[in-house]
Image 1 (cartoon, rainbow, N blue to C red):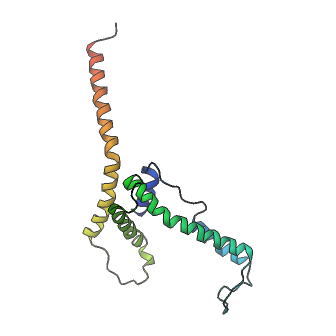
Image 2: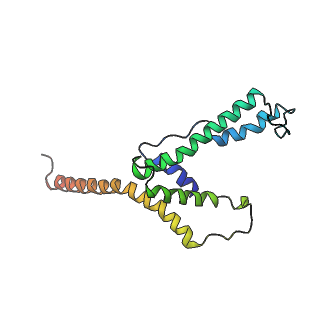
Length: 167
């Protein structure tokens, strides 16, 4: 569900904004390699200012920039999906973000830091799935309505063709 929710705006919204490249997660993955080239660097030095090599600073700056873009992007793309981008404060966006947050929280049970929380109930899971289903249903209903109309027209055209063969 997490991957579906994350990918749905790009797949179904006409004006979704693409994710920045490189992504913040790919930049985070680069940090250990960049830092390994500077073994003398102590990021936990007990001083007010910690000087870092330009290469490290550039990766950190890119990481922060990508994270800021991604944070705002989720709301923009949710608005694009749910309201065609017209209302980023629409109540549906709050429901969408709640469902997205729920599935993000439960995506990796092995990363459960407190270890003692109760698993969500079936009704809680179903309620969040229903939010996603409702969005998909609304976004696809016009397509299926049009498909049905085209099929009706084709059936009518084919029936007339069979009744009146080419001369």
